[in-house]
Amino acid sequence: MRKINSTTTHLDSALVLSGGGARAAYQVGVLKAIADIMPESTRNPFGIICGTSAGAINATALAAGADNFRNAVYNIENVWRSFHPAQVYRSDPVGVFSHGLRWALSVVLGSRSEASLLDNKPLGKLLKQLIKFEHIEQAIDDGHLRAIAVTASGYSSGHSVAFFQGSADISAWKRFQRVGMRTHLGVEHLMASSAIPVVFPAVRINREYFGDGAVRQLAPISPALHLGARKVLVVGVSGNRSAPQLKKSGAEYPSMATITGHLMNSVFLDSLEYDVERLERINDMLKVLPESVRKKTAIPLNPIENLVISPSQGLDRIAAKYLHVLPLSIRVFLHGIGATRTSGSSILSYLLFERAFCRELIALGYHDGMAKAAELEKFICDD
Image 1 (cartoon, rainbow, N blue to C red):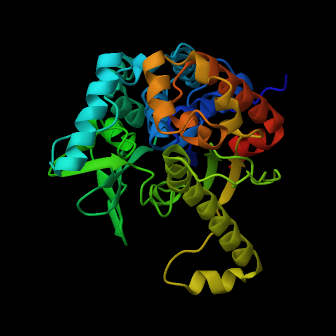
Image 2: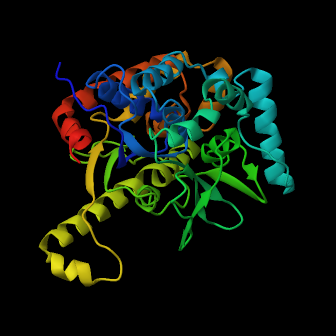
């Protein structure tokens, strides 16, 4: 196996981890591939780490363990490899159906109670055990990290807020519906960023309730650039853009799960793909623009090196194989909304926090990461 010799943290190099619920297990496999082609005791190679939704959890765990990248990755992998839905949301019959009933009543009665389809309090307890948030500031002080950003969506303001913790020279920013806010990250930021709309409850931070960071995130790569990135590694959880897209039969009327899955794919996957394409178009334009012209502009214009790693197989189809391993109460719930059909397996892939599914995604991510080992070496080692 080829090894990367670099043990340096490149402060202008960014890692962007997208959202996608249980699909984020794929990211763990890619991170494991990176860890295995680097020296055993190396520190975090990415000076800037940005995450959204479940990707925010992986990102923050990496930041907290930035002094030893391999150990941080393996600790994250151990959690994902042993996942059970009960560690993320209540999966017992009482918890599932009482919470679902409460949500239904809130819809019918128009109440403002903090209702959701599932109760994710177990996730909060797990995060407190998993992540040592106090280590983040130490990693920044020691030069193992420049910044970590977690994105959440404000339900009142409509803003996509990147809560960041980083070096003192980084300034907060404000763009159209996009805000960068300095803070000390905690469990509440991760719970907010991963609060899938309707499925999990919104989280109050300061004076506003926040939900999943993928909602209204028009430019997922933007926080990394604001934090000073000059090159970006994006690990997505949608299908490989170069792979042929298979069309599904649309003869039958779509179930609630099919419609919801379509909306969730639009929220979690499409904006990242569009942002990557936009970045590549800008890079192509800058390549033909003379440097003398670029220097005259009010805003510095420099190409942003980027590398994208995404699943080489459809995660929906993989998820459909593992429906039977879920607790009966969750299977009944999913059957009721049509998620047990092939056409509804998309939403299943977001909620399948089950070890068998997660392990297959980790293996797929590892395979795809190793397939790009040479590109990863160039990305990590080049200044």
